[in-house]
Image (cartoon, rainbow, N blue to C red; front, top):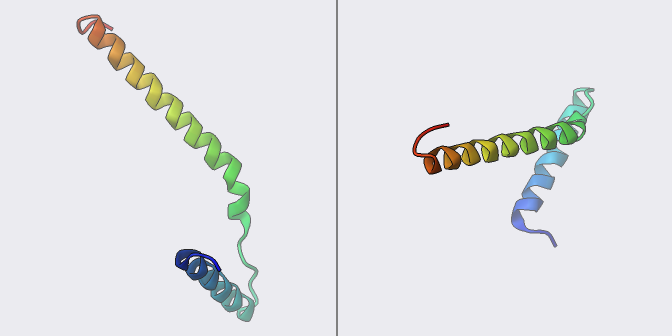
Length: 66
């Protein structure tokens, strides 16, 4: 048995799939294909944040000079 949250999410997904099927629409599973792009963006943001932190630390250690 899954956690209450995962059961709720699964129930919502099934309900949405049913509603879309009733309307003759296909579920949009493209979100799965977004995962690599999303992960790449998250890694880029993390790298930029680390770079910013390193620059700030370097500036502070040099007495405010870049």
